[in-house]
Length: 225
Image (cartoon, rainbow, N blue to C red; front, side):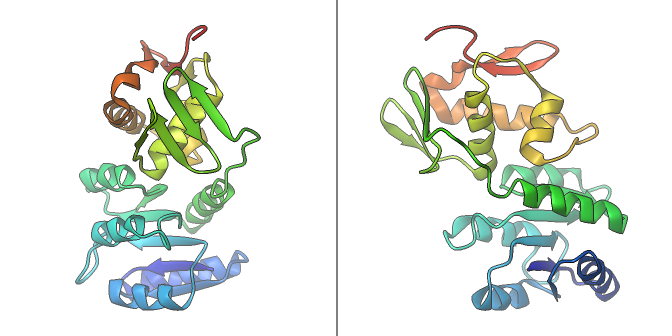
C-alpha cells in the first residue's frame, strides 16, 4: 500500500491512478489529519508527501513520522515546488528518501518509488562493523563511539553503513547518491556533503575517520587500524 498526501484533487487522483495502473495498492489523502487517521488503520510501504499542505505542512508531518517508532521506517518521497530548494534539502536532512519536483511525469514518479522500495530493506551479511572506537550494529540499527550510543537519522545511518562496509575504498559523491538515495541526483551532490558534515559532528572523536578525497568523494579507513 502506498499513501499519497496531496491537497490538489487532480494531482492526487492522477498519482493514485498511476500507482494502481502500475500494480500498486494506493490511497489518497487531502491533508495531514486524514493521513494520521489512515496510518491508525494501516501502515503503508511508502508515503508520497506534498510539502505545501493546508494545516500541518509536509515538513511537519515528515518530522512527526520520523519521531515515532511505528512510522519512522516508512520511506517518504516529497513533492516539492520547483523553487523550494531549502525545503528539498531540509526534507532530505530530516530523513526523506527522495523528492520529486512539480510538475513531474508519472513514469518518473513510478521509477522513483520503485527505486526507494528496492532499498527499503537493505540486506547485510555482517551483524557489526567496527573501526577503532566506532561500531555500527547493523541488525540493531545502532551506532556507538567509545561505547556511547550516537543517535543518527535513517539516512545518516545508511551513509555510515555504506562507508563502513566499503572501508578503504574511495566512493564518489555520485556513487554514494545512487547507493543511498536510489538514483542519481542531478546537481544534488551537496546533499552528500551535508550528511557527511552532520555525521562527522555526531561521531565526535571518530568524525575524522570520514576522509575527504578532494575532487572525488569520501572514504573511511585508508589503511589498517
